[in-house]
Length: 136
Length: 107
Image (cartoon, rainbow over all chains, first blue to last red; front, side):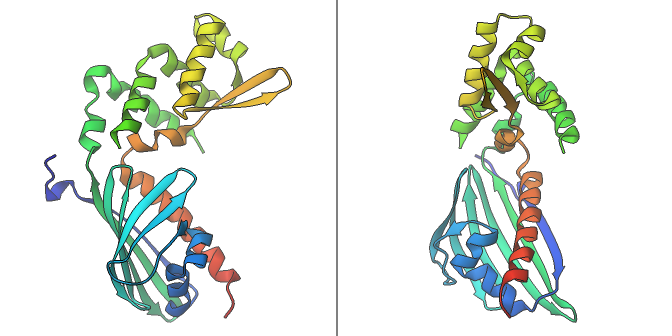
């Protein structure tokens, strides 16, 4: 599989949250709290620790990449053909914390998934988009 | 995982089956009878397609009395859709849940 840098894409979600970084850090790093908002896991804030998020639909294999308490947390995120890295950044503000999540990576089989033109998949995706646009 | 893709593509490769799925997504929950009325194929054929769609996770059934109602499961298409838009929705939702948790936590 050829993968060039241009195929790496990312998702960024950023929010100002009215709580101090220390409190958010706990929610990001303590398994019993992580489970309440993300997924069940055997996470531990230790570099190179391998862990797994599990949910009804499957699981995500992870490895801790970076831990800087109350500031940065990063782990790999491999699930369903998607190889990516999730980076959490916490910056204190006057009102609380600016919390930023960036997930970057690529999907090894993405090209394959889109190479369906000869089977009429382009039409299908066009229809699908319309359906998705109408759904909720 | 290409197995998931294979199943989804194979399941949706059949035009009648795809039409049933698209209709369930567009028009919401329906019974086999209602689907058959418009599908232009026999009821056993519609039921068979629904069985295949169900196996692929693309439809869900709900029994109410003698009737079985089927609904489309758009989420099952997640592996086929660009992961960035998929994950963006996922994380927005998780941020909401994180904020809820923070409100509940002591201190």
